[in-house]
Length: 319
Image (cartoon, rainbow, N blue to C red; front, side, top):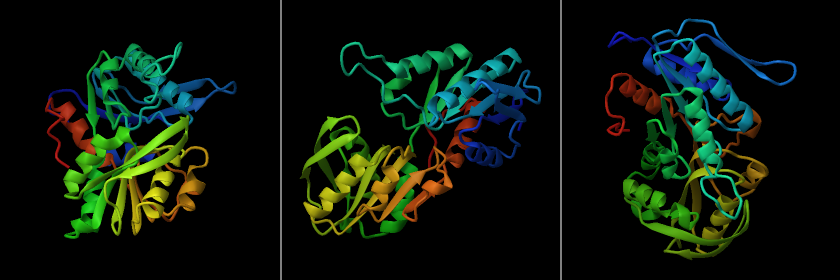
């Protein structure tokens, strides 16, 4: 692919090599030759084994666990490409870590999401391509262009096939008040009604379900969120819609499978019948449950990269 004199190259660090390989396959090009290793003291070493001079480079790296290592890998590779005279560098970050630290929740708190944005910009990135930021306003933390993709259409496409014409049997449920807009948009895509879980959070990663706003009795429920971290909110919501609301089945859909702490055990023992996830974060084999259905994001990112390369709008992507 070489439409305007500059070639396009896809590189990857270590966090999500499979997505990078799928993106490259969709574009019909090989993954760039590079190596990301560690010295004996833990310092990260990046080596580029091919020229990037004058090339439009895209680095695929989710800053998921181990968050700091993956973030440093991304920053160092950006710096390496900048010093190697790449024409432009786009950080393709399917999942952006630290995105939940986007405001001061109490006195003397840092705003770590802003710091991460500054680090990526200072390292030399010309653009960021990401998906489902925890808070959309994080785009404003960057002083470079940010193309923000959404995962809902991919999830909705899967559920449309499952639901078929039986939209009256399903209800889309927001697991908390913060996800109402996302759930409403998702319900509109499916043509289903919406309900909301009203909860009170006692402390970080611990939540208590209070009541259900909307009718879920005798319905099949689809819980929608941007990420599943410890799965406390999700599993509590699933239990509430069955025990208090009278739902018959519960499904869940989320973009980012963070799955930290007790998440796997909670999901395994929950009433949730199926969890549909996107592969913005690589899920190790030992964390994969029979309940999980994992959908690829590579086709969407590949189309976005092609549009960026051809100077076409990314907002008009239809999927």
